[in-house]
Amino acid sequence: MPASLSNYLQRRLLKWLDRRVPASHEHHLNVNSIFILPSGFGWSFIILSLCLFLLGTNYQNNLMLLLSYLCLSIMLLTLFYTHQNFARLALKATPPSPFHCNLQGELQLQVIPHAAAPTKTCNGVLAIKWLNTVRPMDTTANASNENISVAQQTYSFSLNDNEAAGTKQTQTLSVPLPIPVRGRFALGRLTIACDFPLGLYKCWTHLDFDQQVTVYAKPQEGPVTVNKVASSNESDNVSQVNDLTSNEDFYALNDYEVGQPLNRVSWKHVAKNGNWVSKSFTSLQSDSFVLSVPSNIDVETAVSALTYATLSWTGADRVFGIQYKGLNIAPAHGVKQMHECLSALACLNSHSSQASSTLNKTVSTSSIKNEKARSTK
Image 1 (cartoon, helix red, strand yellow):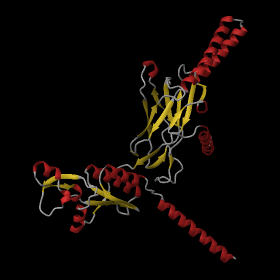
Image 2 (image 1 turned 60 degrees about the horizontal axis):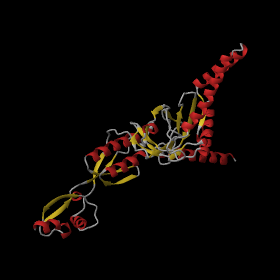
Image 3 (image 1 turned 90 degrees about the vertical axis):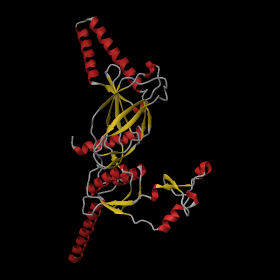
Image 4 (image 1 turned 90 degrees about the horizontal axis):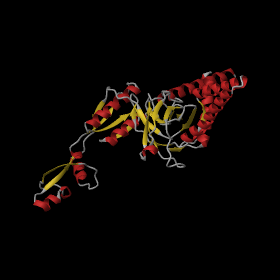
């Protein structure tokens, strides 16, 4: 099948699924979202039953006819039981945590009680794989690409029989999420299948859990420029000390010296033992730095280098910010600052300069054509 025809059919299938099975964080399977057909073993079983029926009719053997009727009865009963078992499945997705593109993320799915049958559970083994590729968002580094391919690998999960055990524990299924490029993505649909109990029929569904994930760049050491932020003068420090709403972190207690502001005095210690001590804070003792990369460095190399520097500086609990290609993050420290920097670097669009240059070439070409047309006239 040509690639263009395959892509067209897949787009039509996804549009039809969006109408029939809308995206949601939580799915309770029903008639509209379940599909069922005989498996390979099931088709073989049907052919065997038909052969027994033909042989029994031809040779007038009632035993063969009875055996063929028994096989067809088993097929019919298994059809209803397989569908009923799969219709008890209910899944809820939790937002996936960010991860680096050189690693593998996970989408956590919780098996929860079904709204229509809270006391019944789905049994058997679930086979889960990604139906379609993830969709890049507008703020991703790969916004110019239509789709990002992920590995079409099937993952098997055995469901716990909580009904037989008499427990109500929720089971969590961790579906691997391999995305080889950085950016922010909307996850596609998952194909979930089950052939319990006899494997004669295969029930499946295509679910979209409406989840987004941020994929950080691969950390790699590179040429990072460190610039120290100019320190404020003494008057700024005094005003900062007198600011009662500052977000400074407590560091230590020191002996009080005459002239220090009274709002830094630890009055609990004064009332307890009469010793005058003052509180000091880490923000008065730390320096701020700005990390950047030379402009002649490739964008992906620069992003990887800044990602590596962000992890290193966060591990050392140092105050830092980032300035690179319009990206300006104020100096700070901590885990929140790390995630802010990594997310901004992951969503940095490396194709903006290429798009602008292509647009300029198109404009210049069209202007030349217009001038030639005017001169010809």
